[in-house]
Image (cartoon, rainbow, N blue to C red; front, side, top):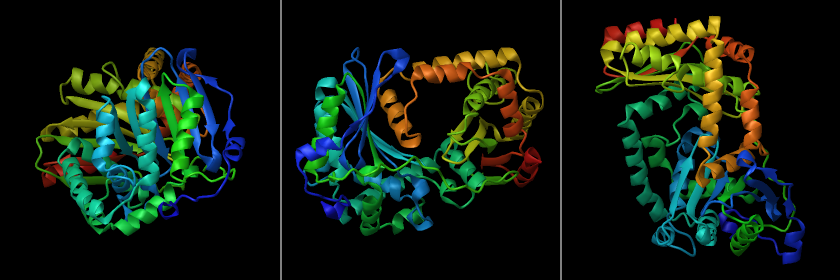
Amino acid sequence: MTSRGFKVTARSSSEARAVARTQTPIKGVNGIGTVRKTTLPGGLRVVTETLPSVRSATFGIWAHVGSRDETPSLNGATHYLEHLLFKGTQRRSALDISSAIDAVGGEMNAFTAKEYTCYYARVLDTDLPLAIDVVCDMLTGSRILEEDVNIERGAILEEIAMTEDDPGDCVHDLFAHTMFGDNALGRPVLGTVDTVNALTADRIRRFYKKHYDPTHLVVACAGNIDHNKVVRQVRAAFEKAGALSGTDSVPLAPRDGRRAIRTTGRVELLGRKTEQAHVVLGMPGLARTDDRRWALGVLNTALGGGMSSRLFQEVREKRGLAYSVYSYTSGFADCGLFGVYAGCRPSQVHDVLKICRDELDQVAEQGLSDDEIERAIGQLRGSTVLGLEDTGALMNRIGKSELCWGDQMSVDDMLARIAAVTPDDVRAVAREILGQRPSLSVIGPLKDKQASRLHEAVA
């Protein structure tokens, strides 16, 4: 299988076992689950969380590659490859892959982000060996045939068209471009019509070979499982594909990032014949490793994270100017974004933007009240736990943590970090983040006079 980018080295099973390394387990959600990690020969990491009280299991493989790793001409290659790994292997056709999981009532999917890709299947605990075999086969044995590349090109172009038909989704891609410009973080994950049409099977195979080595992968599994059994089954699946070397290879370290170009005060408008104007007003945020991210999470929750948040109350409840209004944060390896989204009638866009800008300025200058901060801390702690009530969410947490941070933080530790946020912490991060000059992205049927006035929102 060297043609697929995996180095094959002869070794005995005892040698393979000798280089597997298992770390001390830590407690999972509320001390109930147990998180364990083993590093297999060739640098493949396997991290699991055991929850004996459930009857399901979610198995996923995370790849240390996203759209940020693409050159301009390769834009969309990571997402294209995600599609192609479902198209068949040496052992299974595309129908075999989907029917195997369907036959046991399971769910299988994948997603591509700017800094990672994930493939996963959720099944009954008794069907976990099947899920492991199928997903591992997809990751190690993809054929990436030219005919499949040509067929899937049409599906991806339709996906791009579908996204462009949803301005509420498309505006976030536009905002990324507004903030980061024409570099990897500013380009769309899906690619463009031109870049997708230009990608060939040979270029995608080279991309696959470069980024899907076991040192770039993290296996994550959560549910009613046994860690040692999962490790054995994963090792057997990768060894069957010739995808594990006998050497003690070092896993790829978490991404430290390349300082992204960030701008402030920019305005980008995209004219569309839509019923609503879709706007994102925002500024640079924090990297995902920044210790102040806990305080920013509290700030984000208080500003636009729920029905009691400032933005929801001011824009929707008191004035009825928008149905959907919220704030959000995105953290990358070396930078981040803070944004406020609203969808409103084109005639109301200036009023909505003024209210949002006034609220951001007020919080930057005066901070939030102690009551708002206390309520936001409670909401954030509750949503953190409630968001981990299924094995899929748990798999996502442990897989992403290993890939992006290189370690695991228990949920109890996460809750403690949130609870430890002080009003001074929140006010300090509000001054730094919200005190910056914002940028603005808008999609909608704006007239020339309206468009010219939008620059006032970031002045």
